[in-house]
Length: 375
Ligand code: GLU
Image (cartoon, rainbow, N blue to C red; front, top):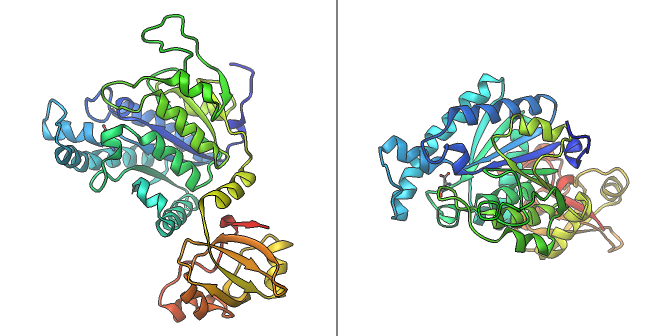
């Protein structure tokens, strides 16, 4: 075993991404052995207390097998139909393999647009975090019925990174059919060297990654390098490794140096602040009483509606709002779980009354601690 220990040892929340060509053994339907292997490792790591999320393609290839299609159709609507047929098989495979190892699984179909929309972002985030707290392994794929990004661009690497951002994962492991990132294309240049580690986002990486991937999954190395850059924005380290390497996930989590490690230059908390500052416009504010302000700042708690005195602006669920104390000082910013009009109704009320007042509940917090940064 290699003695270098990587940051993956301490990774508590890990997103693993596998592409079509690996899952389906070069297009011949879902490969039960390969999926079984990853599921055993996911279960082992989850049972060690890590939170594991799987982003897996392979629906189209499985659909083609089920439909008896020998060549990949060119029409997008046929590919989408194949994905719909095949997704059943893909989900079934993960569900049976994970349950064999004592783990519950959950199917989540997402699109990039879902994660760009603030309300959906928050919904997807709370669903995934709830699934993890329920000790389930979310199995995610692109929702091919409504979008065709991956079908067209082979881009589930990006989805993997977006999921890592969404749940602030510590690590993103991209499993592929190559040993990692090489200095040159190893298929045409025998002198190509495997890159052991680099900082995600380094411009040289994009140059090195060039070219496209195999005929089945079309996410070449470049999409992986860009995915690592994106994942690093929320502080996740990325590993690109060969998916059939024995016990690859378990060994990576033990700290073994396998494949290429692309480290995030920014730590998680700083990254979250950066993300809020860069990507989200302030849509409103709430003024909170001294008790709530104390709980936020000194005790590290969430903001509950009961502490809110006034509501400013017309924000929606998922928008960023400023939190001010009674003296008008901004003490924090965060993603609101309720819109401005809902907040006006539940302000000053205990969270136990939210459901009675609104007819539903998005949780007891107005801003959950995890979605909040102190000023
Ligand atoms: N999301 C699709 C799948 O899981 C797309 C993969 C592809 O284009 O082959 O099959």
